[in-house]
Image: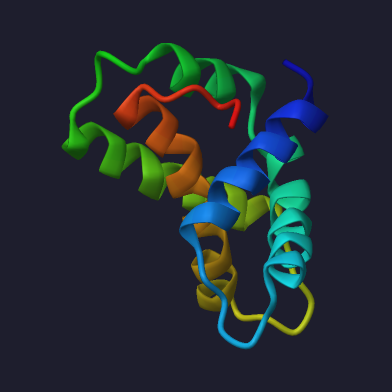
Length: 111
Protein backbone atom coordinates (compact mmCIF):
# COMPACT_ATOMS: atom_id res chain seq x y z
CA UNK A 1 0.00 0.00 0.00
CA UNK A 2 1.38 3.38 -0.98
CA UNK A 3 1.47 6.37 1.36
CA UNK A 4 -1.06 8.08 -0.90
CA UNK A 5 -3.47 5.13 -0.66
CA UNK A 6 -3.00 4.86 3.11
CA UNK A 7 -3.55 8.61 3.60
CA UNK A 8 -6.60 8.72 1.31
CA UNK A 9 -8.25 5.77 3.02
CA UNK A 10 -7.44 7.15 6.47
CA UNK A 11 -8.84 10.57 5.53
CA UNK A 12 -12.08 8.97 4.33
CA UNK A 13 -12.36 6.89 7.51
CA UNK A 14 -11.80 9.88 9.80
CA UNK A 15 -14.21 12.08 7.82
CA UNK A 16 -16.99 9.55 8.37
CA UNK A 17 -16.32 9.48 12.13
CA UNK A 18 -15.54 13.15 12.79
CA UNK A 19 -17.86 16.14 12.64
CA UNK A 20 -16.14 19.52 12.63
CA UNK A 21 -18.60 22.28 13.52
CA UNK A 22 -19.30 24.98 10.94
CA UNK A 23 -17.64 23.03 8.11
CA UNK A 24 -19.26 21.24 5.22
CA UNK A 25 -18.28 17.62 4.53
CA UNK A 26 -16.03 18.83 1.71
CA UNK A 27 -14.32 21.38 3.97
CA UNK A 28 -13.92 18.72 6.66
CA UNK A 29 -12.29 16.42 4.12
CA UNK A 30 -9.78 19.14 3.18
CA UNK A 31 -8.91 19.85 6.83
CA UNK A 32 -8.64 16.17 7.70
CA UNK A 33 -6.56 15.43 4.59
CA UNK A 34 -4.18 18.23 5.57
CA UNK A 35 -3.65 16.65 9.01
CA UNK A 36 -3.37 13.12 7.64
CA UNK A 37 -0.95 14.18 4.89
CA UNK A 38 1.18 15.91 7.51
CA UNK A 39 1.16 12.92 9.85
CA UNK A 40 0.90 9.92 7.52
CA UNK A 41 4.40 10.10 6.01
CA UNK A 42 5.88 10.32 9.49
CA UNK A 43 4.25 7.09 10.64
CA UNK A 44 6.88 4.42 10.12
CA UNK A 45 5.98 1.70 7.63
CA UNK A 46 6.50 -0.82 10.40
CA UNK A 47 3.69 0.80 12.40
CA UNK A 48 1.39 0.86 9.38
CA UNK A 49 2.07 -2.81 8.77
CA UNK A 50 1.65 -3.54 12.48
CA UNK A 51 -1.82 -2.02 12.71
CA UNK A 52 -2.95 -3.72 9.53
CA UNK A 53 -1.63 -7.11 10.67
CA UNK A 54 -2.46 -7.00 14.39
CA UNK A 55 -6.26 -6.98 14.11
CA UNK A 56 -6.64 -10.15 16.16
CA UNK A 57 -3.96 -9.72 18.79
CA UNK A 58 -4.07 -6.41 20.69
CA UNK A 59 -6.09 -5.59 23.76
CA UNK A 60 -7.68 -2.19 24.34
CA UNK A 61 -5.03 -1.50 26.98
CA UNK A 62 -2.20 -2.29 24.55
CA UNK A 63 -3.76 -0.08 21.92
CA UNK A 64 -4.09 2.74 24.48
CA UNK A 65 -0.40 2.53 25.31
CA UNK A 66 0.55 2.40 21.65
CA UNK A 67 -1.68 5.43 20.98
CA UNK A 68 0.08 7.47 23.65
CA UNK A 69 3.50 6.46 22.33
CA UNK A 70 2.61 7.33 18.74
CA UNK A 71 1.07 10.69 19.67
CA UNK A 72 4.20 11.61 21.64
CA UNK A 73 6.60 10.44 18.90
CA UNK A 74 4.67 12.29 16.20
CA UNK A 75 4.32 15.39 18.36
CA UNK A 76 8.11 15.45 18.77
CA UNK A 77 8.56 15.21 14.98
CA UNK A 78 5.84 17.63 13.86
CA UNK A 79 5.74 21.33 14.56
CA UNK A 80 2.62 23.21 13.56
CA UNK A 81 3.18 26.97 13.63
CA UNK A 82 1.31 28.97 16.27
CA UNK A 83 0.20 25.86 18.15
CA UNK A 84 1.28 24.65 21.56
CA UNK A 85 2.43 21.06 21.99
CA UNK A 86 -0.87 20.31 23.70
CA UNK A 87 -2.86 21.70 20.78
CA UNK A 88 -0.74 19.69 18.34
CA UNK A 89 -1.37 16.54 20.35
CA UNK A 90 -5.11 17.25 20.18
CA UNK A 91 -4.89 17.28 16.38
CA UNK A 92 -2.63 14.23 16.20
CA UNK A 93 -4.60 11.99 18.56
CA UNK A 94 -7.72 11.50 16.32
CA UNK A 95 -5.51 10.50 13.39
CA UNK A 96 -3.54 8.05 15.55
CA UNK A 97 -6.80 6.71 16.98
CA UNK A 98 -8.14 6.10 13.48
CA UNK A 99 -4.95 4.26 12.48
CA UNK A 100 -5.14 2.10 15.59
CA UNK A 101 -8.86 1.55 15.15
CA UNK A 102 -7.97 -0.53 12.12
CA UNK A 103 -6.08 -2.92 14.36
CA UNK A 104 -8.71 -2.91 17.09
CA UNK A 105 -11.69 -3.62 14.88
CA UNK A 106 -10.00 -5.62 12.16
CA UNK A 107 -11.56 -3.45 9.47
CA UNK A 108 -10.00 -3.01 6.10
CA UNK A 109 -8.36 0.36 5.50
CA UNK A 110 -10.15 0.48 2.17
CA UNK A 111 -13.51 2.23 2.55
